[in-house]
Length: 172
Image (cartoon, rainbow, N blue to C red; front, top):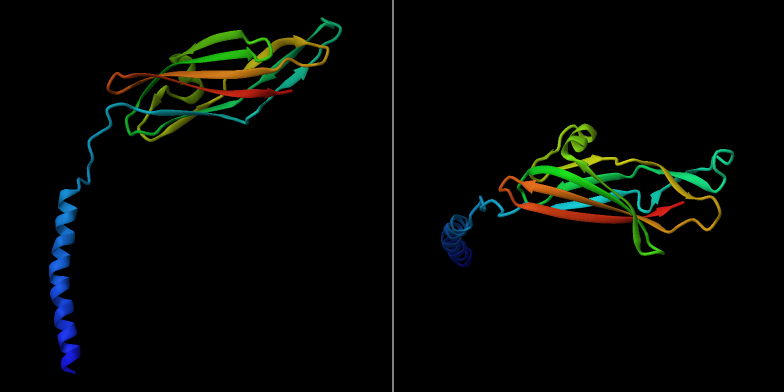
């Protein structure tokens, strides 16, 4: 019985020393870290590869078909600092020829119409669908090896200008 009492006293002693130490450790770690110096954005394109619909109106122009695609682009802010999407650059690149075939820049107003806003809050994401329709491709096989490249210019709430891009191949 005396041994059990001694073990209880020792246990209570260690607990009385350790519990305040845990509280002290909590005090030296800041539960509210400082805000990030800059936002961080990540882009995704789905599906990947991007599915392409091909329409070949032979009587109109038998040498060409028309390709259409509408991938979903998601922009996510991951650092904890919001901001606004200023523009989205859409490029179709011919991989085999190593050149850009088409490039268009869509402004903040386009993003707002597509997503409801061009504002991206901290640790949030928004999505939109840039549609390419009626893109001429040769009617004869093989189809060109095309890739879509999407770039987003983002200005965070501390006026840092960021540019992030993502690529996906096209599947005919």
